Amino acid sequence: MLTSIAAAQLQPAKRHVCYQRCVSGDADNPKKAQHQARLKKILASKDAETDPAKRKEWESAERDELDRHQDELENMCRKICASLPEE
Image 1 (cartoon, rainbow, N blue to C red):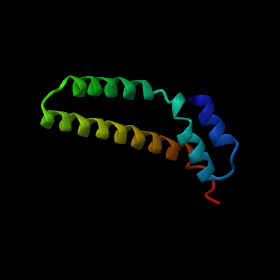
Image 2: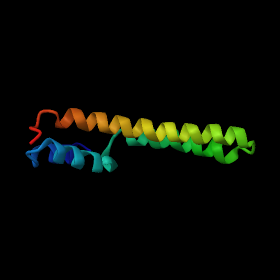
Image 3: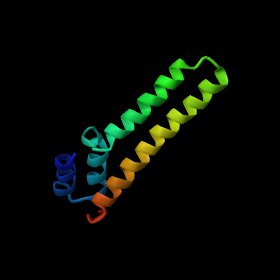
Image 4: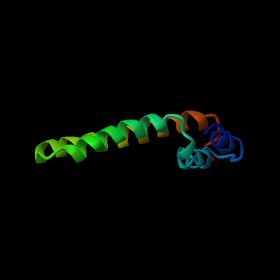
């Protein structure tokens, strides 16, 4: 992740280009392993559930986890690229 973040920050001269490169470099994100572990537990629980109401709760938890991960990634990239000029 650090190499792709460094590349995202050093090469482009524009903030939006840095941000796009940073977000697309999510594969190297060190927090992604934690996110994947939480998501795996949620999916296992959802698959094991037979009650439709409980399955909906697990689906909601799955969406929340995906949203949380995306928000964390966007915040991290915003901080990394903040020092670059906008235009």
